[in-house]
Image 1 (cartoon, helix red, strand yellow):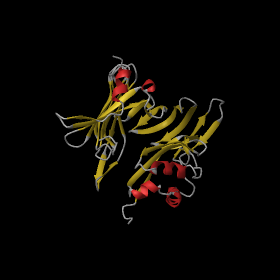
Image 2 (image 1 turned 135 degrees about the vertical axis):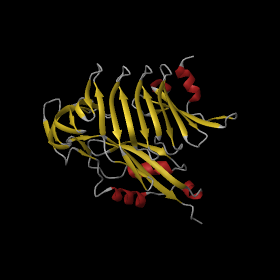
Image 3 (image 1 turned 90 degrees about the vertical axis):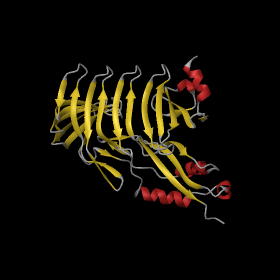
Image 4 (image 1 turned 60 degrees about the horizontal axis):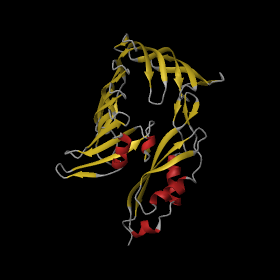
Length: 325
């Protein structure tokens, strides 16, 4: 039977296996990682199962061939951050990456990434410390890099490497004692921009981006990478939401308590777009959150290498009506 037809039956179903008392959820995702209810546009599906230690086992599989895409663990159904070992594979089943995450979801220890051939591409080490139950990575060490032919061009922090980021950025250049050095170049934003930059002992000295019309955009440490910013700070937005939020009548009657979480994209113009309620308390609480946020001011957009970029953002709104009489 076609796997897409099968997924029509398992989509968003909570199943209880009485023999093992196992609770599991299945959801569908597009190729770019967005959750969908349409099996025809789904690229992979995710199964989340409650383990005996109350953690959640996460398994993702490609729909086309039902081969495993990812294996990992969440601390709970609500806290969807990876902890422990996380494995990812290409669509043909070859290993893509091996990573280890701390109890609070920080990438630590040794991380290995592979070429589509299954051969090692790059190896990192992330030394870390834990204080007051919070994990902090103290350094980023690049241990080895092999090109697509298997030639090792970097070893123990010295040599040439090509770095691939999850945001489709490619960087090419040399390391010395684990630090970027000399001239670096590459592409970002799906090859819409190229860049050249200069480093000294890991510190960016200067650089410029170039668009398809060869317009150059200079940058340095101050505008190399900056997050989006709400006018006068995020606390002003929190205050605006607190003063503007009107509890729906049903929410008051049911004395809701908890968090409504809204995700959105801050685009290159600073507008909040693609708003979505990720966590809802019901009784109209999510819809009211969207209404209020749509009235908020524009942001200063995020910057990457001097260029305004789209940035994903998550905004929690805490509600508590339990003290009402």
